[in-house]
Image (cartoon, one colour):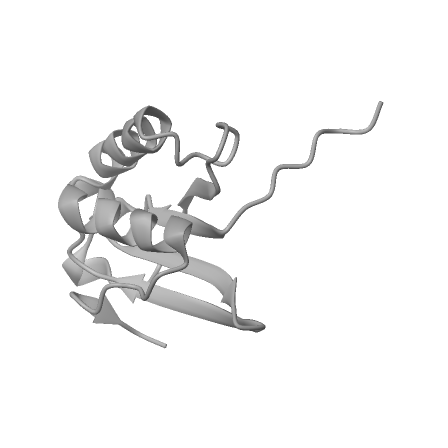
Length: 111
């Protein structure tokens, strides 16, 4: 039997590098994971479409926790890189990814 395929709208990465962890990224990851499950936004929930992964360094070491969102939108790869991410911002990014809405501009950095 082949593995089950889950359709996703996008992917969120939460940095777990040493500097980001010192600024609370492990707690942010767990809180965001719990939120995605409770709100049925997690890709494996009925109606959910968002993947969440811990990552290595995302390059905002002095301004962590860092979060990266990426998705296909209008046939192109769209990325949003965020520094000094708190839980409310992470939730807004996740909701935008799920809905296909514009990513928040607040605390963006990078490409």
